[in-house]
Length: 361
Image (cartoon, rainbow, N blue to C red; front, side, top):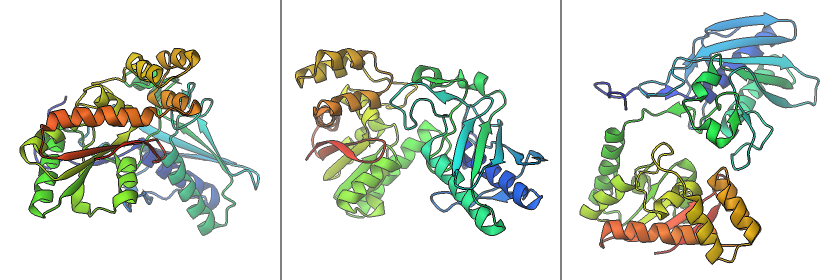
């Protein structure tokens, strides 16, 4: 891992945020003849970053704007990459069509949030882009019917440093982001914040905390329990760091919530859930499905599956409670790590935040 910069870590912006800002600038230029520079966008959690344009090209019927990605102090492979959005006008009623340009990958295998045959532009960046297009259309009399092509020069080379090829994303990078914000990746800083969160829970008399791997699982827990913000621990991939600290500083009840893939790893005893440091064990998942009575075809497909999501879908197609089994095994691993003192439940969610497995207290 690159050396942590001194002082507070500086946050950055995702490829999705950069693409959306560039799309807004390009569409505004099409409708007004001028590029807004800098260009401001609204992100899902209320942030309003302003981006300087690195490229401006206006032609009849289409325009291109470019933004150099600033990932802050995060050692992000796409830091410094040029994110280009080309916007073309479409006939009224066509809506928004997304295209993959140079350096942006295409999805070729199931199990990802975008189906095969689509550009690897994730749902939240698409939503942000739809929002800025609607905003510009309302302000300047457009219809909002456009084709948006995202390009990242050199993206195919950068993608080789990611897990995209293994996931079946070919030809380049994914356009990512769930909040638009890049929080600097630092194991020590993140684990320290987990410890502080647990300390605050205890100091405030919180008897039920939730350790979640991300915002989707956190939202699922909140729909169940409506816990105070102080009870929410942003565990991320650091299950081990969370559980080891709780072993020394217990809280009465702990809900662990996360996506199916990450909790499959915890169920198999992994305490670091990052995709670069642990993988799902397809053979063990097949063994679990076999115990649940899966068909031979499902077992074969599980062993060859591209992603955990694909395996979950296989189990659901046969009506098998694989999520509950994973939750139970993950709960057993967590309890073994805690060595008493804290009651545990595990909630498994899918990419849409629906609960697909649960092992109660």
